Length: 434
Ligand SMILES: *Cc1c(COP(=O)(O)O)cnc(C)c1O
Image (tube, rainbow, N blue to C red):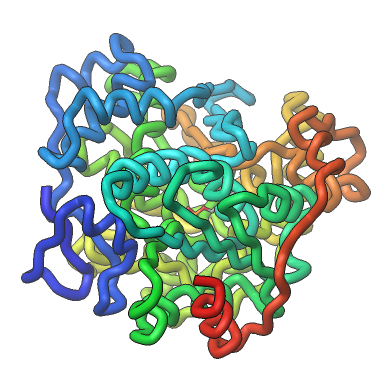
């Protein structure tokens, strides 16, 4: 399998290059040259495969001959060491719980896979690899956890000051060892801009060997496609039922991975792009308007992205044709007030606790399927509700239990560096700490 930049279809890259570089020099994004068509028997008999076997069956097409299947299988067994259960919330509405990993958010899947793939490719080199990651909250913790203690690799996390939750900040700043946290006086988009500029800066690249760990890294997306198959396996629908996936979206990585799953042959009828007030993509689906927006702060902070990078991967997948994209994806937008109502009502009606991101997925899904009994819907429950305990505590009329993994973080000391959002100070930091 070869990889190309979204901006240049003539220069091929290996999987190793695409993963280790993270971003091509032309400021595009790496994409696979094609999406593999999965075997018809595999697709019709998913229930015979374990989650790990599903991962290996799909993953082997993306790594091609660069990683032996037995090695890939071992990596995938380590990555998928926790389940992705499908839980029925109410008639025809299922929650795909993606928060059973170490940092209690779906980003563990991508981060754990990427960390092990990078480690695999880097382990015979004598060069320290530095991973830069901009995070709106959950990515950084997942990436830190994924790379923690791996030799020869150092992680630099940039997060926006005052815009991550109590437990997210704990997860970002308490690892130590090969993990460094930087608190940026700015927004997530500022953090993302700093990372992009660092990759394009020749002074930095002369002294540092950099890689990126955002959802812009193609190795993050690959394992995110696995759980769409795992969900369909658990649903075991008959052929005539329409299946909708509602995806709470920010940087559009999860949605892109779902579209990949469909292109590989998984029967999915529609996607819903479930957005908070950062509604660039829903707005695009409605109006064909491609103008990015400034991000605004919401309760579902991991979706506070004004300029989603993966938009260009989605465009590429459909030949940049809006008509084809709107056939696959429906828009939906929820305010913070509507998010709180959804969490409250879902708890009252179903005794099921949603996190603010999953709540947007749930509500969006409900609005599409309520008039059509032939549709079965799955929403991605992308984080454990306790991660947003502080934000929710005073707003919902019930208690949110805190898992012990989170409680333990309160005892650890936070270590981080504070920087402004201008590029020069970040550049200086990177060069001086190399
Ligand atoms: C990152 C994140 C999202 C948004 O996912 P994208 O792939 O960036 O669209 C949604 N929910 C949670 C909890 C997240 O951490």
